[in-house]
Length: 169
Image 1 (cartoon, rainbow, N blue to C red):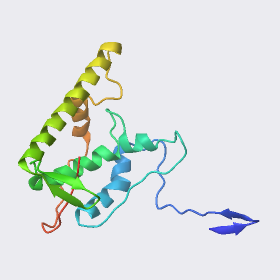
Image 2 (cartoon, rainbow, N blue to C red):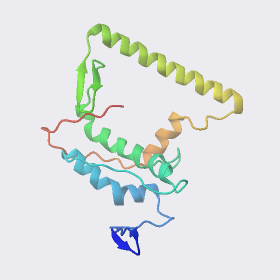
Image 3 (cartoon, rainbow, N blue to C red):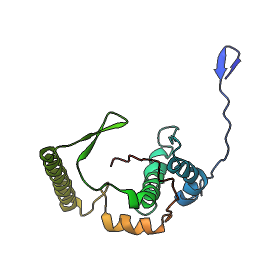
Image 4 (cartoon, helix red, strand yellow):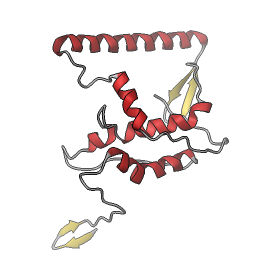
């Protein structure tokens, strides 16, 4: 920051500037893939968007069904890389920011029932929306999403087996 005639002027520097014709894939490869690789090597990383309202932050992060953004691409790389190490039981639950609770068999059954009820409710709402206007706008269309993921980077990155990960979805 510099003080200029009583006002604070901030200077920014950029390592790269992407033009309006840049694709989601090019942006991901040029800006996001390296921090994801670093994360899988045990480094801490934060990726955030900053900008004016309606400047494309949500589009950049989420994308569309046809042109997925950096969040689905990042999750794809993470899960492709961790697939041999995924824990599929439902007896762990996140607690605070860096801890987890081990659930009893009874609590696990409650979690499974809660998940099933939530997924059933989401499906019912999607079906109701579909009956009103014939489309599923703003909801996930699984076949189209899977098709768009085929274009996504199929990257399974090498990792140190001593590093532990928690990705809660």
